[in-house]
Image (cartoon, rainbow, N blue to C red; front, side, top):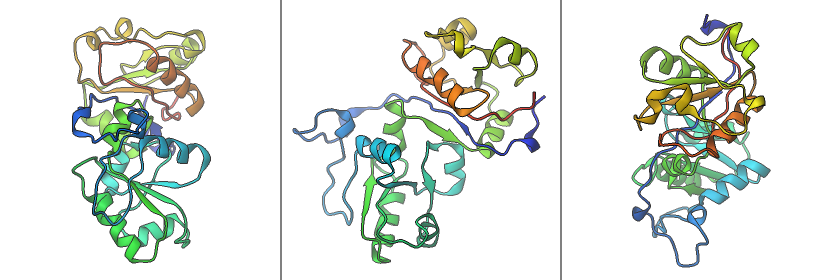
Length: 248
C-alpha cells in the first residue's frame, strides 16, 4: 500500500522526447549534438552545451541550476540540478559565493527564465554564469536522467492514470508490496529489457509516461541503463533512476 507520509526521498524519472534538431544552430566545428548550442548573439551570458552540463554534474566544476518555478522543478528536472528562480534563491544555492561557476537552464529555446535570471544575477555581481539554453527538452531527447521530487510523484500517481511503473527489485521484494499496477523487472537478472512484454500498451502508445524505480537510486539507475540500451517503439521511455518511495 502506497504511503505518502513515510517517503522523504526524491524519485527520478527520465522521459525521452523526440526533438526537432533542425531548430538548433550547430556550428561547423561542433563534433556532435552534445556540443550544439543555439549560437545566440547579443546575450549577457554565454551558452553551455549538453556536454558541459554532463561534465559539471560529474565533476562539480559548476553548479547546474533549474531557473524555473518550484512547481515545474518538482515535476521533473535534470538529475542533480538545484532550483533557484531569483537572486536571493541563487545566493542560497551558492552559499553567498558569487564567483561559483553556474550553468542555468529552463524549458528550452523559447524559454526566458534562464535568460532573465542570468541577467539578474550578473547585475548582482555573479562572475561566472552560463546558460544551457537548449534546456530540459534537449536533455531529455538525449536520454539524460531526469529527477522528480516526491511532490511530483504524488501528483503523477494521483492524476495520470495512464502512467506505467516498473519496479526493479527482486521478485520476492515485489511480491511483498509495490505500487498498485506496477510491473516487475528484476534488474539483477536482466541485461536487456523488453518493456512491451511487461506492458503491451507501450508497443502502440508513444505518449505513455514511464517511471522506473527500485529499492534505491543505484538499483533503479541500473534498470534505467538497461532500458536505454534496449530498442523500443515507445519514444517516451529512457533511462531513469529513483529512490524507494513506497511501503513494503
